[in-house]
Every structure is written in C-alpha cells, then in structure tokens.
Image 1 (cartoon, rainbow, N blue to C red):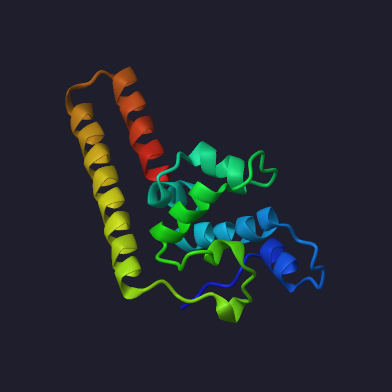
Image 2 (image 1 turned 45 degrees about the vertical axis):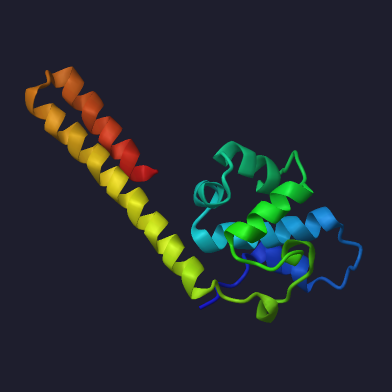
Length: 148
C-alpha cells in the first residue's frame, strides 16, 4: 500500500502554485521515496549515497540540488521510469514499488538487521571477559547499534 506524503510534501503537491522548479519537484519525489523506505540512511543505501549526501539533497535546508546523474540513479534504484523524478505526481500517480523492488527492499532490511544482531551479539559476548568500564562501553555500543 502506498504511504501518504508527509504533510510538508502534501502542501507542495496540493498547491495550485505552478512555479515549482525542477529542483522542488525532484526533491519532493525523492523525499517521498526516502520516507517510503524508512529515511535518509536507507534511501542512501539504496541509491548508493552517504546519509550526509542525502541530507544535503533532501534535508530541511538542502544545500544541493538533485543533479541529472543522481536523479537517474534514484529512478533506477526504485525501478521508476526514466524522468519519473522530474515530474509532478499526485498521490494516485505514485505507483507502489514493484514486487521485485519490494523483495529487494525486504532483503536489504533483513541483511541490515542480521548485521546489527551480529554486532550486538559480539558486544555482549565480549562483556563476559571485560572489566566494568569496558562492559559499560560495550553495552553503550550495543545500544547505539540498535538505535541505528
């Protein structure tokens, strides 16, 4: 099922103002996709960008626009047709991810979770032989991994 646009994106999309620039439109569409996959970090993993780069492109105060190469990478990563990111889409015009893309997304999520579990397990095993200060540090590390 398609998730609705966040409020600030709905305001842009539902606006009668047709002066939106290419940058506004592509950013709106990319923010929608980022929200769909769970945020900037997962969007970046999918597209091949660091979270900081995604933040520069899609954050509250973006410092960069989405260029043509990045736009095509986003479309490819989300199995969207060429030029999809450059066009206005109403909520009904945003198709759900294809079954292949959804399976890929779930596989990526599962891999991330397995990596986190392995890291947390290693931290907790290491506490068995650690002194008190190291135990606290290892537990803090394990908790920070779980918060990612």
